[in-house]
Length: 219
Image (cartoon, rainbow, N blue to C red):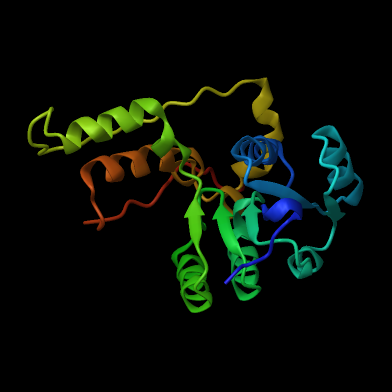
């Protein structure tokens, strides 16, 4: 189990993958007050150093080698913010290193990787959470409370839609349009809606599965 601490007894956090969402993690850890970002990891070492400087992370070490970051004794928690195909090997490595893990959604892009991640986490007995952040959205929390209080009566049917605009800023996710990288639109973004629905109705199983067909040949 992870026992690593940063200065002042705070939980030391390491972040791998330094796209837009990593900045949100840095803000979140700073807001908590009991966690400190002590390492940043990117394939581009200069980027890791630049992000640390941008956010004023004075006690942060930059890495371009994930395995080396995991060896840093200050790291007790790893936030995995890399493209989807990297989630499985990086999660497994973090678990084997005894680190607690926050995994960006989707957890994985195939069932084989997902099961391997699950087995590694269970064997290591570390804590994990997937960043389905809408569970902490005030609107979602209110709906969940109303359902628990039976204020909406008995729930017999649930349906969910997910709409997401694509603006100029989406260019940073160009890697995500390839099936072997993004998996599908459902995995990349629609999983928030599916998770929200399952959370509301407390559904743990799945009666069937649909295969996405939204990728054109050759893409």
